[in-house]
Image (cartoon, rainbow, N blue to C red; front, side, top):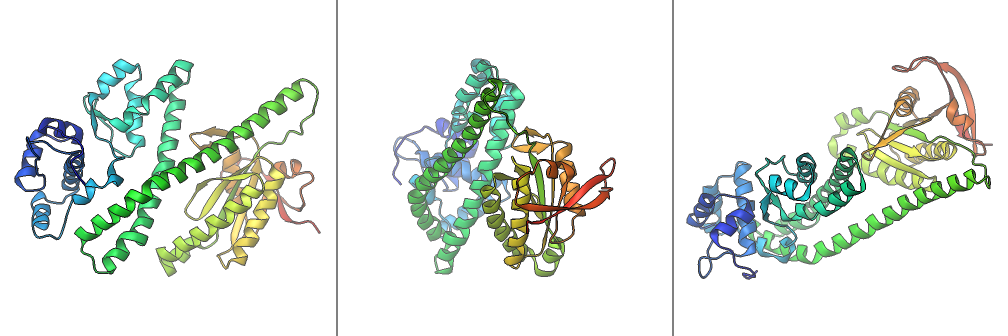
Length: 404
């Protein structure tokens, strides 16, 4: 926790994104301590930024200073190597970076928002970690990428990483900080102890996330390569592909809202966790992918409608076997639009309406799924034309069961 780098007061203010008056006030209150020659460390930069952020959240500086003097609170933990990954502000503003790099200001705004912070003004300073994102955007623009496509990539990346970071923060609280306090540590001791563990854990967690990301890349790139190869062979007359439109699938838990009201949010969260494990495994085994979680259910994309029907049966049976509230599922096959990590279009809407119509424990599919599911080990029983809310015309629906 030594002073590994030296910054003047002005440098400290710039890198922390605070005013010089703020720095003077923090020193006056004993929350910052200048080193030899009136210099400050990188840890002091973090302390200034974090303390200023706490004040912005409604915690009075005077109260923090009193707690530090009494030994009830300490910000020394911010000197741990675990926090070295968090960057300061650069000297360049968003306006200057936009002009220098040729990147539209509105795209640079998305970079800031993708990291979880509020929209910047043109003359706000760019963070150093945000600068690291810009070369990828420059190359994309130079290659001809549309700005809206780049924005979608940034937002999808930011949202996915936000979920990872929030999940980490939650299990860090339940598995590390809360047990330390329960063992008798006061908050100041706990913050120091957890920072030491964080210094060891953080690089391993980053390594794990990066490895998982590369695995997901390989999966997505391989699927794209398969599609390109099949198309090339078909054009050459070497194969004849059986054209099957993708299927969208919605699985909903019956009575989820009532369960939350009767047994509380914790019970509902337990159901969601068990459901997540179950449906991810089943959908992956059948070429499907959970797209998003909807509170009381899940939306899936299946490349093969027949395999989607098989997976839907497995999931409803698995839900029942794990003692969860019964599930009801709807599938529809047809063209979809993929954008920003999500799927859109009539196919999605119809699938959702079919799921709403299905009874607990039932899997219903459209005629389009039946037509594209040749060879799937399931039986389809027609239940007649059905009028669905928000869908024009009657749809021929089928109930799905296992063959034999």
